[in-house]
Image 1: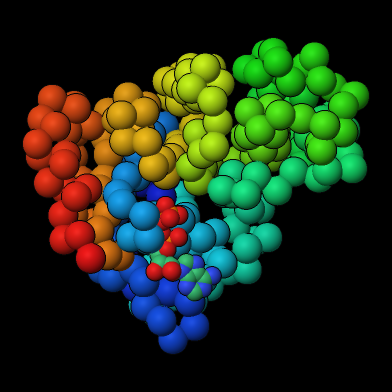
Image 2: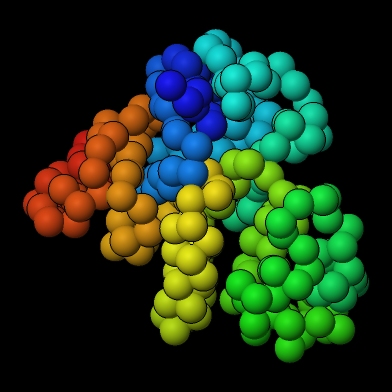
Length: 236
Ligand SMILES: Nc1ncnc2c1ncn2[C@@H]1O[C@H](COP(=O)(O)OP(=O)(O)OP(=O)(O)O)[C@@H](O)[C@H]1O
């Protein structure tokens, strides 16, 4: 049986002494896309930050393609195959679009050319500086920069945040194209549950640092009352 692309085994993590995530158990198959939804502040970003090694791991294990990365520094996790698209995008403002991509490039199927095929809008901006881009273009560049590192697993934190609906649709089409060819394992944290549930067959719902649903996106799409109950649950 193929091993998981990524496995979180009983993970407990947070910031310093503060524990945010409890008892996280997840197995993601190679090529699978997983959407993560839940109210504000329930630990979605912390989940991705923990996989990247930006938090304090209090217990459990994180295994990337059979290799325990739990204690590795972030740059070594990236070298082992993780790609990260942070919520803040963090593109370099004084580098051009091309330079932003080239600094992150590692050999593999993703190149400047294939990133531009995925995001034609970016190719029209190739000589623009990072700070001359719209929010949507910055998000496309942030995703392109993660891809060009040719990771096996990509983590995206709220790609649609702050973007106009028409740009969100364009981005969603690109993310679907990206994930549906099966080559990449992807976790997408998304505040917009309708969008998230359309991106992947499987979704998890988090609440207060726990996973409270792990199953078919379709089940939640077809049952708004259940979805409301899960993401509206235990309002503080
Ligand atoms: N750098 C940090 N230091 C300390 N606590 C933090 C830090 N970042 C987040 N937290 C806390 O961890 C908890 C989970 O936050 P997190 O950002 O993971 O939630 P989220 O589900 O991603 O929410 P949002 O959609 O608002 O980003 C919150 O209580 C938050 O205040």
